[in-house]
Length: 462
Image (cartoon, rainbow, N blue to C red; front, side, top):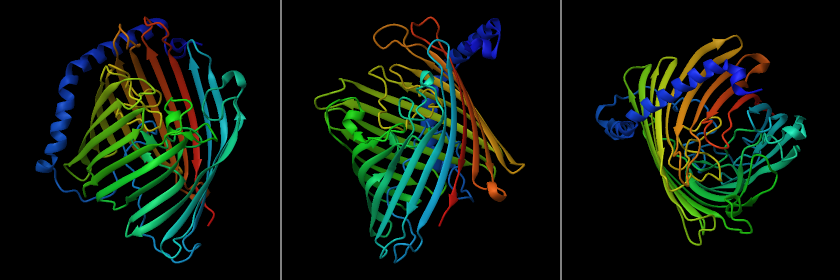
């Protein structure tokens, strides 16, 4: 069934597409002024922003395909003397249904049951803490002709894996070293948790965990295990250089203000492939207890290096976003532009464009993108808290030449119901839908409809 027949009549669909195209081109007219406006707001913030009463974390919509967060690597403040003092054993079951219908390509569909069993020891002699996670994704539904959901191994085939097995050593205070299979959550290097099992890494990292103030992080990553695999492969092979066995080094700093404004820089390099430098500034302006404005700006630069085993390229991405928070509502606009030197490379997860949403990242070579979004928190509804968010993104790319690709638009809707009463406490039900339209005049273009149901549940066994 074609996308148009699922949504609208063909005539109405053409009218909508025409309106969307017109809106995109109107958006492009203000694009050139939008990024400098975000830049000015971000760095002028300390001159005009008020103090805020709440020092809690920024409340953001959980879009797992968009991650500019720079997660700390150091140790927490929990202290103990014995291995099982303060130990944690948490079962995190998850079930996930995904259905994706293309106009041309084969339909993909699957339903999985699994999750993770996480163990964290206490701090032995206040110095060493061990952690491990056993993860699994088993097939409830997944015909061979509808493979490709990434819920399972290719086949599709269910699998289990020890995704984490690490030791953290406290150096002093909140400074520590973490060694082994572990989760990282950094721009372009992270868990990318949008299926059953997140990406994990074989790595050693050092850093601190101060909360507010200056945090640093550095490390070496030897291998990655993707979300649909039980095997770890070298970082260079994951990036496309078959037969190689090189790792990745990274370092970064992040400074968080008491008002939750964040500034950070991260650098990664994979020898003979490419390096990535990411920087961001996210500034909060507070006008009242329920009204605030966020001005976010990020910059990504990527260059091939050494033997250039995956090609010779030099490219960059600039992305900006404004988000107005008023009580239960959030309104946002965003824009990004990608250099014509090449697509942004993301072989290690965690796309960092503010316009990355369910399906597309809008960071192709020469792509200009514009988006609008809205979020609403309904508060307590029945047994849990109900909220939704929606985003509409338009992407415009070159029509001719070596980097030509089809223009694309994407509309997403996400509904979250977080139960908080009785036996169902910590149950999180998420419904997601995405509609993607590509320029039909471009060869190989393909529209799609994507629908997902995800149910998560956490409960402590210790």
